[in-house]
Length: 485
Image (cartoon, rainbow, N blue to C red):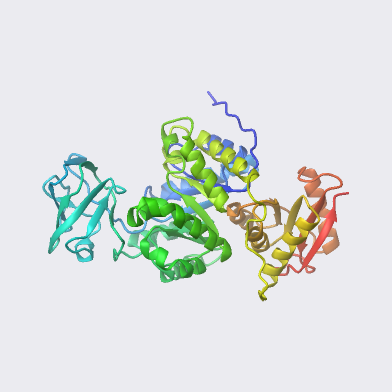
């Protein structure tokens, strides 16, 4: 029996990223999640699954988008180094406050209460007596008493049931693990092979990690459009090197889970605001992630605190908000996305429409920046209903979105790849249109599409950015105020 869902479309500018998993990897459900206006980007978690699994899921996502007649982006999220305890014989061990806990990086096979193995074999070289280790997202903390070869002798600071494969962080950061493992190298090739639109890099420490990722993508993607790179900010070192990481990336993810373990929960809200602000100032996009609707893994409605959390990320100016387990393994994936869409729409109504990158008095030396800033300024002055960007790659639409996160931006492109890429940009609504190479003819074609899609009505003013030389990359050089006939 087909599930009846309320797919009444919800209009919002902030984009929603949903993680794919057993609860959501079917065409009908994904189509409804797209149709409700809630799903813009689908995240593939490469911590799980085989290459064949991800290939099949890519087909499912593309088919759901085809049925919904809307393109969505696929973001492949690489696992990064496994900084975890290994498997335990009974699946878990009970640890009481004050008890000794021994970790052994050389242990082969399953661990137990007497000796717990480590997937991260380099941990003994990264810690010293007095260091505090946080396990299972900080639910268990232990203090290092001594390090002997592969063994780390600790004492538990609190009681907890530690389960297999739970993560380990060092308070204050400082783990030497790099951003890439052999598994990541293989997964990157798989991600490029399935045509991912974005690639998220885990546990980034500095710009060099992102430069390495870009080099690997260049090597793996010999033809076609290369995926955009997203730096996941989840280490204290990444905060220290934030600007250089943003500069080397296409966008960032505020990955609040591991970050909170390293810097402390109380520091995360202010850091979130700072990261989103810097990303926008540096003309990059941002994704806010982790536990945004956590209770909806098992409940049909979110808590009021979760609603406030999503709304505050929207008010901070984030481009996208992300679901993880809520849509991957939760009982209510559709409802989660629908609630997020409703919260985004409500928060945006109360938002100052002038939030964005302030116009600089300094020369920017880039035509696309100047066109974008000018378009937003003129649109506000004439009270235009929308900005329309004729774009080959999506760059102009993206630059416009850096200066305005309220005014709808309709990005018309002949490129499916660009359409999918723009699914991440806040306020940008990508549409497919093969325009004439004749400028005036192309403008007529745009107006017909806007009327046909009921985007604008007769008498509405809109701004359009385009290039006198149509269908050329980087040719945008004009702004025109238009009125629908």
